[in-house]
Length: 228
Length: 118
Image (cartoon, rainbow over all chains, first blue to last red; front, side):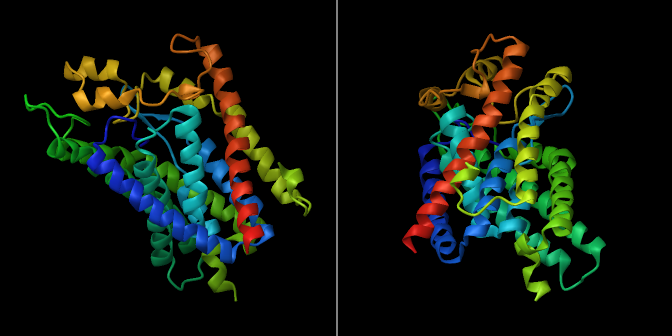
């Protein structure tokens, strides 16, 4: 899901840089007013976790690979705005130091995985959990937070790929950037994430949520309202 | 990096950092399993060689932008494109640990700066 350099036209990557800058600016301002020293280690660890979980490429035998992002659990632990910062730092280091995701695509990749995903995950969790205090419902909400968050993020990425042939083609009609149309990109990216990678993200999100609620419930942002 | 924190690290936090390092040590699974199951690149992340093979051409705009940035450790691999799997495995572990330190360090720095200003 890391868009490399060259796959997006400037007409796509420039506005997406703009969108990510807007979210970074708000997220940093919110973080500045809400951050306390005791949360810093968790913020650093969530970012480091997002980095390292993305190294675990999961194969679809004979086909392609994908991976979890860790933005779902980051959003539940830190809140979606703080998760924007944590996951963005991981993605920016990946692009600059390891060439994973393009430099021109940093805005797009951060928008897809560090903005869309944490917010969708957080809303999905809140919506599914509702006011219920059943443990089953809580962990189901955790699973679907990761599952829906990653899948939707993949679909947004696929739309960015898929609109490229509509935006720019050479005089011979060949696309200038990502070559596959929406009718290919969206089904492929949606299916592989709905059927495999999303499930893995969901399981990881639910398991870590359970672990944190058991050991350190006061750091889990998503359940704070319920505990007062 | 923990030492920069004036407050002492809690045993729970220490355990989490250790788990992150264990994950870095296990991370080569992320290249060994795809190799075993003959799974290629992630969809939409192919190099120009693969595009040439699949499409028969490399899109013009893509060709211009593809090498715009030379990352110091491209693809988490210190050995270059022809590195053996062993070299790749060690590179991957080193990249994982380096990544944890860099990402954790940058977040610490941002947090410290934000706290100082407020």
